[in-house]
Length: 189
Ligand code: SF4
Image (cartoon, rainbow, N blue to C red; front, top):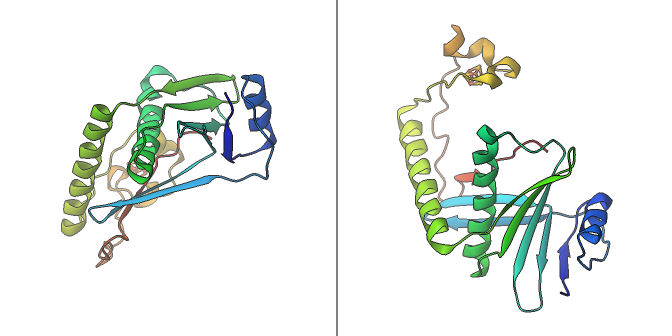
């Protein structure tokens, strides 16, 4: 299958693409910026590689420097792939055929083939999340969610979960229509 390369990341990405049997041409490192505004909510993400066939089929590849996530963290990886799929679907009107996260540390991959029903549900989930964030913003209330990451958190000293006092919530933190946004979550890498 002949693939038109839209963007390519580092040289190793090219090597892996070639090894997987895809015809690919090296090009300078570049990432594809995906952005869309839905009801004033800007969804935004960067993918390492986007391949498009002459017939318009799309395949997304994102490279991770770490190892394949354990089962408990696979949901986060899936969330990220759905996010990319949704933004591509909404901006180009075509569902990507396949999304792939390639973990360079153990050379393992996670793949996902989206369908419209699932992405529509995911879009509703994002909107509900944003509504909850807007509500919390209006009330100035963001509850701490302690977990494993607290160990590395730079804000721990101010965190109420550890007896700290957070600084006052800034007035008008999210006001401009279209300026509010959600970035694709970044997993390791
Ligand atoms: S220490 Fe940091 S990561 Fe943990 S709950 Fe507080 S703000 Fe969140």
